[in-house]
Amino acid sequence: MTGRWVLGIESTAHTLSFGLVDQNGKPKPSVSKIIRPTTGGIHPREAADHHVEQSSEIFSRILHENNLVPNDIGIVAYSQGPGMGACLRTGAAAGRAISSHLNVPLIGVNHCVAHIEIGREQCGCDDPILLYVSGGNTQVIARLDGRYRVLGETLDIGIGNMLDKFARKHGIPFPGGPVIEKKALEWITENPDSTLEGLELPYAVHGMDLAFSGIMSAANKLVSDGKPFEAVCWSLQEHAFAACVEVAERALAHTGKTEIVLGGGVACNERMRNMSSIMCQERGATSYCPPKMYCIDNGTMIARLGWLETNHGRVTKLTQSAIDQELRTDQTPISWA
Ligand code: ATP
Ligand code: FE2
Image (cartoon, rainbow, N blue to C red):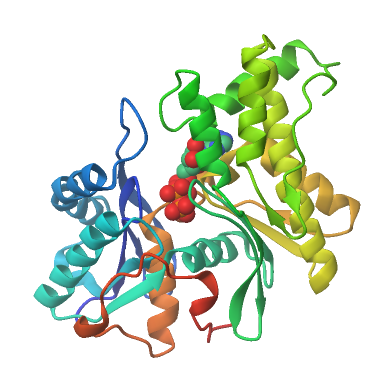
């Protein structure tokens, strides 16, 4: 190996991000660019074009900000899946090009597992249940028999996509989640005695799984029935987050584990963090929240997982480096502690 750093490239959806870990797996903050469409949702082709246009500059910046030269990179990791095909291909192409040019190993990693591993590294927790709440994914995951197993997940759309769609319908551009958080906080700050009466939404828990489209339609109806928008944002968060935390609690009870770590963009939400903490306190468990820059999609988490995988002898041959849009969390064998 010429260099000692692991470069991580994230490109599963709207974010192109390059991050680094050093030879001991210690993370450095990522450099990222997010495409923010002014109208409508994310178009995979447009996001992919954005990533191609930005990749050279972001690569230069991550090196510059860490006083590195290309030869300091000893391993190149990229998100192999799951995600939008067109977007994933841009990160994989950049990864192949850099690793070939530098003549260093290439490692394709599982994006969902990377969210877990950066959370474990940042929070110092050992064997947590992961409550993974992002735009495209909502899963409750536990490590069992050498895999991260999905114990429960959304049956329709990811919780973040639900928040973004609801926001978009009411004129708020992507990403809508942070704006809904702000509106909800405004409502409950100004109306501290507010109850959910008249603001009820359907129950999103289905066994160990979740479903959010019913909640979203009912929230839209509350707005068209004349309920204050801020009040509906508050109710939407209360119902949707309580559902996720309930499934996470069942996962704790079922597995006997005592830690939860949050991951994904919606884990930036203070109310989500707070609900998970309360639930854990009530049952003698601990809820961990990584810094927000490592909850959202970031290249550093890809570098961290690349470091773990290559330390355990795995590399990706060019002939096996194709992306996999449908890669499942439990398809990746976990050989590290
Ligand atoms: P994945 O590929 O893992 O599904 P993703 O592509 O959705 O991830 P992330 O960066 O993990 O990307 O998450 C983005 C989502 O997080 C968006 O839906 C956004 O609205 C939501 N989000 C970000 N911050 C907040 C917040 N403070 N409150 C609620 N939602 C948030
Ligand atoms: Fe993600």
